[in-house]
Image (cartoon, rainbow, N blue to C red; front, side, top):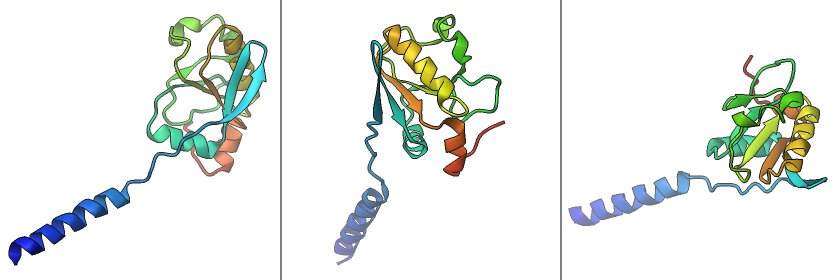
Length: 140
């Protein structure tokens, strides 16, 4: 009887642990076509999900500095992105997510990088403004 009870408890704990894990949401982004290719826009909510299992280089391109989103890897001024390529991964298929304050400077950076052959670019639509409006924090 005791073995039976232990078996039932074991099954309960295993199924409880499996049920508490949330499935990973697949983020596809909204495609933006530009000369030479495209990049993907993501919402603040999508970016927040992506940051849970971060598999990308996260770049703040805003000038002047107005803070960072947690997890930021690099700060490269949008108007110097072409001159600062050495800071970016040499593999142009590496996933890179760009952001700025409003989304404008990062869109310019994404377009420049697409023209230079980068193929896995993502942009935070609405930038840090949208991020804050969605209730997420900016690190000053």
